[in-house]
Image 1 (cartoon, one colour):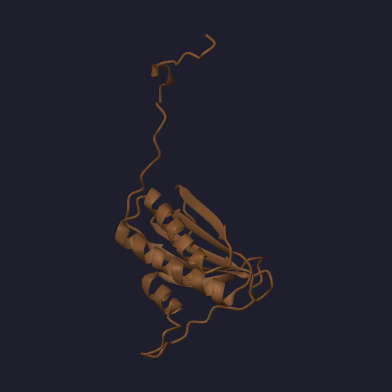
Image 2 (cartoon, helix red, strand yellow; image 1 turned 60 degrees about the vertical axis):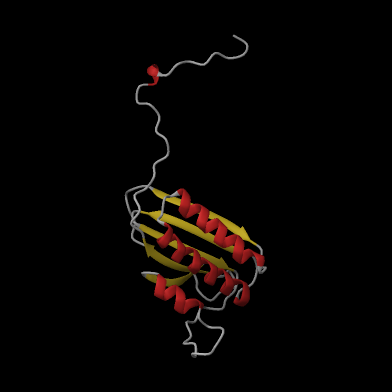
Length: 161
């Protein structure tokens, strides 16, 4: 994701490495994207990718799972971290296989995906981040602005006055 001089929004959560965390990650990512006014169709792809990456982190990683969502310019970067030295490998599933589709799905939905070491070196016990970028078209909904002229605001008396 290229650096941008505009506003960057970032939310992160840490989840236990249990099956119910997959649903919690979907709720977390969905709420973040909704608060940033990302259109539902685009948000749905990102939420699905989060589900796949968190499932992989729980099944193949170790320790707690970190989920980070960053919005900068018109790109959402989703990152999922675990504390395993194992690297993600995209496998080609067979037509009838029930598994090995996670990274194929992430690759199909995102504009780019990859991985990086948590502490700089990939393949160490410190773990890794697996990330995916998504182009979004939504205009950002800005937080309520403060009046430029504060003198125009009506003062509210305190209880002791």
